[in-house]
Length: 148
Image (tube, rainbow, N blue to C red):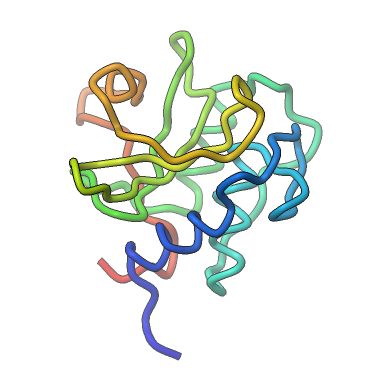
């Protein structure tokens, strides 16, 4: 089997476009939430991605969400196709998305509760402002098993 690239991750995520948003669901075409999208994409590519423990709130506790991502993903210094973004609605990390490339620049694929399905759109300044940061910079990660 050939190595999995970030482009492979983004391409698999595109297969999930239009899947209805459903809290804690994990099935392409039937229902998925943001964490389930990342887990489903990774598992579909044969990557060693572990799921977040069930029972989390619709707006997850940012500490456990970040810990789940950091337990299995490598933090990277910049955006790249297939990277996982840790995003916020308020102050704490509460959302994840997958970076894609579009003709106009960076995009993102995510299960968006607000419009009830998996979508892809540009990573606009408004969305970039939602990426969580710490003293080392943006919280951007590479899935385990993805070639750097």
